[in-house]
Length: 118
Length: 116
Image (cartoon, rainbow over all chains, first blue to last red; front, side, top):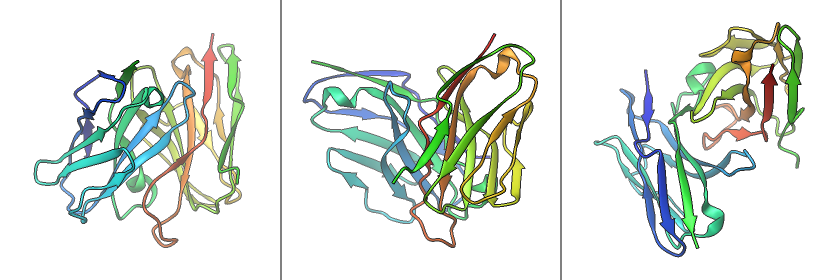
């Protein structure tokens, strides 16, 4: 069964600086999706960035980028020029590509709470 | 575009009461999911559906039931509420592989349920 591990329960960053959140996963599949979701205090789950495993190029969305190391099964999130609004829980999640039913379930890590200091 | 809508957002139940969490989506997604999120934890799958009339259990189904009579609606029913069901509940939906998609789930805003 697939598992997702986020080893940093909490992280802190100074406003305007860069922070990297770690995520590792375990799977025997060769193709899959990886996601980072943001959960602010409002509870809403917001998609930050996605990566398809067959794509070698790391995904980028504005200030957010990932370092996808497929062989190491690592998927870290880098936030550049951190802003106060980036403060939230961040969840790493895995999804099989051949998704259907429970096979299409997102498997979540336990999350990393990011604080941004002004 | 409303996306995924859950009601109610907050509810307090007494032990043994029953209730239904409503979920509706307007994106014509085939797949729908119910998750629960306990403090300090990620989300765990309760039930899912791959289309109208088709539902199945996820990781933590005990004490819950679902139905899917239409593509849009996927209500979650709690029978005989217990303190262990105190949690935040999320409904989510996605396209099926056949519909073509980038794989992400779209989430509702969550429903905080407290059982006393």
